[in-house]
Image (cartoon, rainbow, N blue to C red; front, top):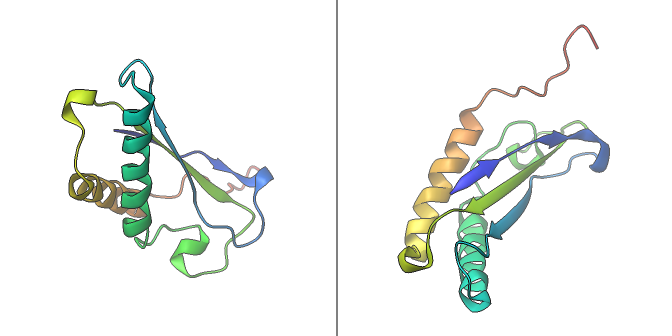
Length: 112
């Protein structure tokens, strides 16, 4: 699974939380039913694990600026090896904890 997380200040309201996108490539999983199943599992795992505190968003309980965190989760596995919900939860927990520890590179500098 790949994760990207650009911060975009222009589209968010004050105190906005993280927004998530889930995608499964048609080339990796050709059947739409299976792609939708994988996306449902990913969304459910994210819903259950998103309580991890992400600095700089409303998820950490503090008032934040106009920034919002857009996270894209890209499934890169194959149809033959679809993880279970529990395996997705473990992976999402690991990713979100790493994201919470990540220094906020979107902080304005003195040059701006």
